[in-house]
Image 1 (tube, rainbow, N blue to C red):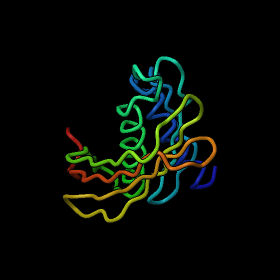
Image 2 (image 1 turned 30 degrees about the horizontal axis):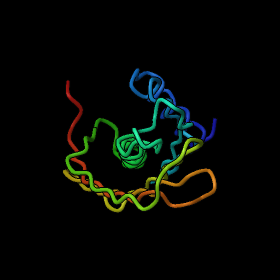
Image 3 (image 1 turned 180 degrees about the vertical axis):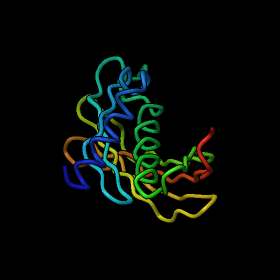
Image 4 (image 1 turned 60 degrees about the vertical axis):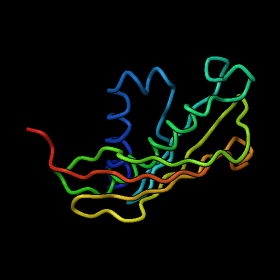
Length: 140
């Protein structure tokens, strides 16, 4: 298995182990050094009272993409957690495929910075997000 395939498979396993991501239907599409793309099929269980995809689902997708993008560049034995998340909602999300493309901006010994764009199945930009992540040693 080449490096890219191993990276993607490892991240897919991590997501698959977490009941939250299975419940939300979030899946890893692809990843590379400093990038991660995740998606889900927005259905009736993901919409708000107006029939639009709930902003919390869009924010969750963006946060997941950014966190996984940072994970791709962490040294072994390090972990990360989001400490700040900012998002602008630019267009309403409708039912169907929604994709978040996360990318690292900078990852240091204590902090990481990432960005993500969230688009619908037609490529329409729904949201743009930024996050700051705390980077620490794995808990023993």
